[in-house]
Length: 141
Image (cartoon, rainbow, N blue to C red; front, side, top):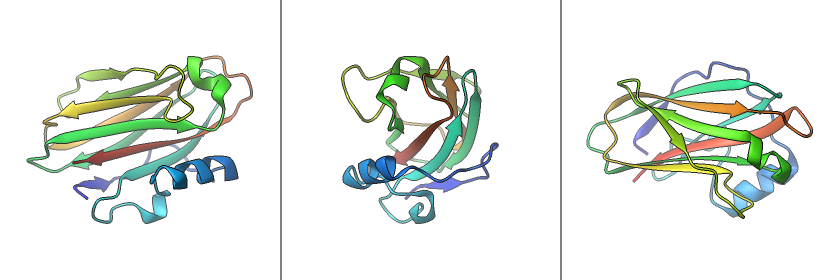
């Protein structure tokens, strides 16, 4: 794994059994198992309507690709969730929502990411059943 965790800016919460099952079936691991070779760094959280959560992580030099994905177990939240990736230079990259798929809600694939501290922003609009539990994963390849 070529990404290292930094502390998250909001409190972490436990995932529901549905999200844990879905993530296990897609090879996305809970935070306690992150940072082993070939595994993503993951952040788990819960967000209310109008919420904004930020996470930071470090990308090491010479990585060919960065993949960031947002997942949740509430399909109705999909239209009102947004994912952004912020480069070390402060450039905000909006990640598109994936239509018709249960997981992930949104994802970005970034070729040749710059080394340094990156941010992930999770943004919620008017959620149908807040708070919404979610997981964000980041990995390089």
